[in-house]
Length: 132
Image 1: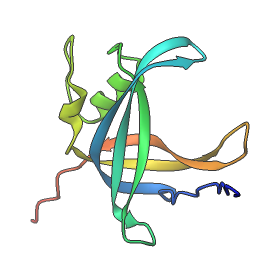
Image 2: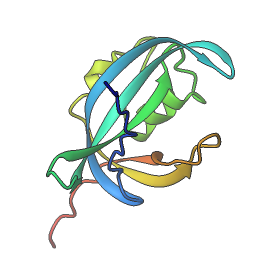
Image 3: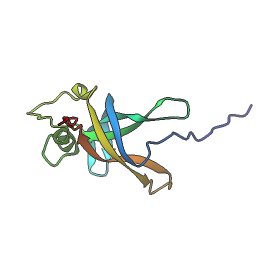
Image 4: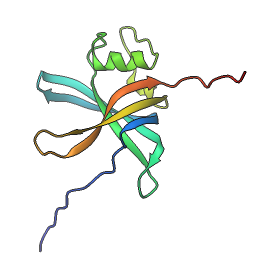
């Protein structure tokens, strides 16, 4: 009996500006990185303006280290761009439901050459302009 393995191809968010909602936060636990072992989480941004061929929303994840709220950390930069102030602690699950915008860029994996979508910038939703 043969077992056929097929490389799955996921539909990616297209490059450019997208309206998204943070839909899930996943605790990854301790992960090996090039900077040593880090406690990490993955935050999922779901597009409101792009669907797959099957009509499903398209997600793009962002991985952050969860042990630091230092102003230069990826997590602190994300919270700052969303207009959220974090003191000494912050519950990442409180991000679920937050609407914002992301700028997507396409990168290639250095080892495999496969392209993937990544978040270049996160922007706080602007308030709608008031009519004059």
